[in-house]
Structures are given as structure tokens and as C-alpha cells.
Image 1 (cartoon, one colour):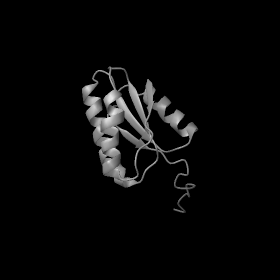
Image 2: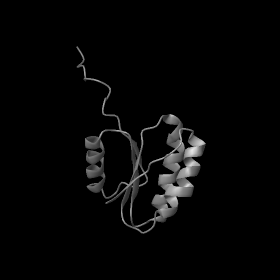
Image 3: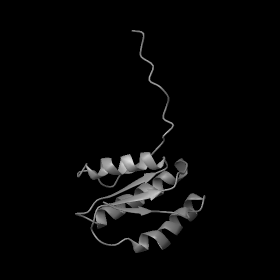
Image 4: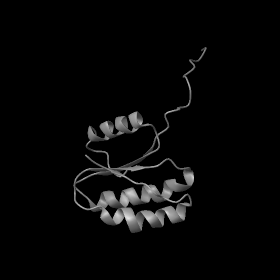
Length: 109
């Protein structure tokens, strides 16, 4: 699985999408499986990132394209390992959060 780190995106979602399409997406070629690693961002970036990943996934068939954002190096490595072992998963955007929701508290019932 080929890894491509996406860096230098502006904070504004529209500007970030424009930068991605003009700079990063232009250099993505081939049909190998690909995972795009985006920097962490708030929810305002989710729609354009998912749309870009879905479009690239359709173009690269039979190769797969997925995206990951945020998370520690260990979390990113675990997500890449998961995607490499899941041949049916493509066109997905996985925002990572190492902090999690906290411990699971069992029900008293």
C-alpha cells in the first residue's frame, strides 16, 4: 500500500481543497493501493476530503484509495495495517483520535 502524506494545507476548508486539487492530487497517478495521510482538521474539512478520496478511488480501480487524518504515528500505522488487510475497503475517510472517548463504564443493570 502506497502512503502519501498531504502537508501544507491552509486552515480555510475552501482554500485547503483548492490547494489539494492543484498541488497534491495532480501528482497522484497509477493504480496501486493508496492511503492519503491528512493533517488533523476540524469537521469543516470532512466533506471535501471525503469527496476527493471517493473520486480518486473511482479513478484508480482496481487499486484502492483511502484517507486518514490526525492521530499519533502509532495510530496511523495501525490504521494503515488495518486498511492493508481489508481488501474490500476503498473510498473511506478515517479521522483518528488517540484520546478516545474515555474508559467504558459498565452498566449497573
